[in-house]
Image (cartoon, rainbow, N blue to C red; front, side, top):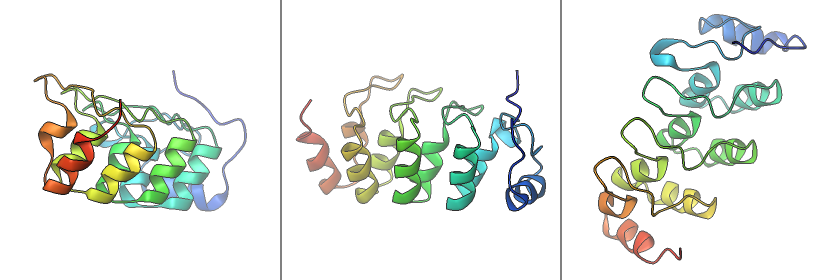
Amino acid sequence: MSKLLAIEPPQAIQNWLLEQGFNPTDLEQKGSNGDTALMQATRSGELEIVRSLVEAGAVVNARNNDGNNALWFACFRDRHDLIDLLVNAGIDINNQNDNGATALMYVASAGKIEMVQALLAAGADSQLKNLDDFRAIDFAGNIEILRMLKYVVV
């Protein structure tokens, strides 16, 4: 069941949604690979669009066909501002996709030191395991990330 907006979004948001192929009155509409408008805006690094979608009631914990939520895309883009916005909006920071991978596992494997720090500071669980029984530390892309994850207090 789709979530229809109670109020009409601002024209700029409506235009963006239409340009991206989304219905401006249906914030749960799935696009390519099951991505929602919120995921697409996050992937594109559109801070004000993301903020407006969250304020309009977009489901922050929606998952795409791979089981990822919008946090994955904020990490992909190396965007602290988007991570903060999504965390403050209540996104599941420990969402595990269809392979059991979390955003923390992804950024650890990609060697994204600042993103690892941001997720740990926001409360990401470094002890979660994926389907192959690996934790974020097992994916550490460099020695600094290995050190950070080795000394996380659980």
